[in-house]
Image (cartoon, rainbow, N blue to C red):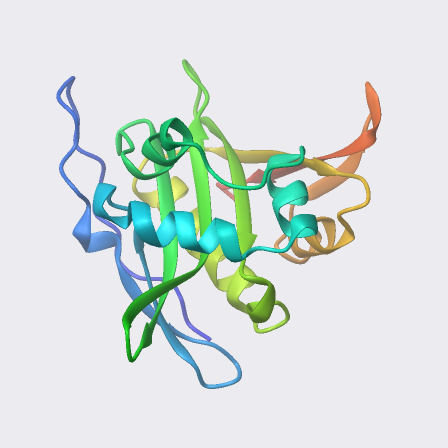
Length: 196
């Protein structure tokens, strides 16, 4: 599956960046299903709430590293009304007879004063094992490297989240136990060398 596309550069300057529509891409998963991966928008709030609400308790726990039943209004606003100069969130949308449905999201926040970002990802339980997580993470790394010109991507997951650690390893992340917390795994990817 080919996922690399030309990615425009981030808007410079202090004003909030406009919606980066040029980052949207169509992907076909190995099972033939097609999805749109695109930056999240404030008007995705209902889709984001529905998506998180549909996740299993385990999926929500692994994503937030704490028990979360639903998103609060403040969390929802924070997750959907983002500053495209400092962060990115790509949603995976599939077409249904009722309209678009969110089935995954991958995001990062740029660590202030660095060329690094911290990422998170979660995929709808019904879409596990389809290649969607791989497509989302590949797209997210492309955007981090080519749009924001970042050099590294890092994340933390719970040690019991073997799926996430396995995905990260398959993408070339250095995956190791957190020396300060045996319940966590640290993941780091050199974007200059990876996924080229």
